[in-house]
Amino acid sequence: MAESAAVEFRIDRRSGVATYLQIVQQTKQALRLGVLEPGDRLPTAREVVEATAINPNTVLKAYRELEREGLVEARRGLGTFVRRRLGGAAGASAADSPLRAELADWARRARSAGLEKDDVGALFTAVLESTYESAHGDGPYEGTHGGEPYEGPCGGAHGEGTSEGTHGTTPPSTTHQGDQDR
Image (tube, rainbow, N blue to C red):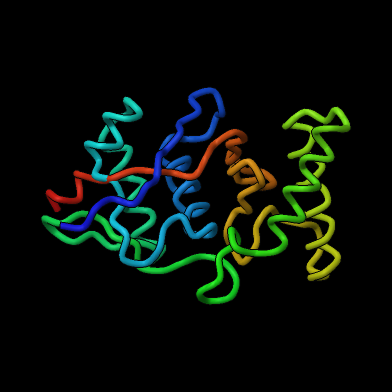
């Protein structure tokens, strides 16, 4: 049986973001960063429940949403497996990008300048929104990129008029036992 990918979901109960959406967002972030690859098995619902103390139905709802989006597939008796990557060029992950190193340097300079994490997130989001607004010329930035909520530097989605925002979340590490029952 395939081992679960090294993904740990971090649930922020104070974020105002639905728990299942936090799992979806963190899974997408892990796909973009190359933490999860096609063929990796997500943690079982039981493993996620044990690690996070959330309702198993919440985990199953998140996995169903990821399946609906074509990112994972449930295999009866085996679990839930990653079907495809997210992000730019095929085979390249954002984690390997030279831009990541530049962004990390920028974040260290911002911290050295006395900016708090939320200040850096707000600044980054504002620059990102104005850059994509002017680059695409499609009017006010709607908080999406390619039809999906933009997941910010802290793992949270930033979307105009949405309740999606999870600053401080980290890429997931979970296994999904409920899928074994499907």
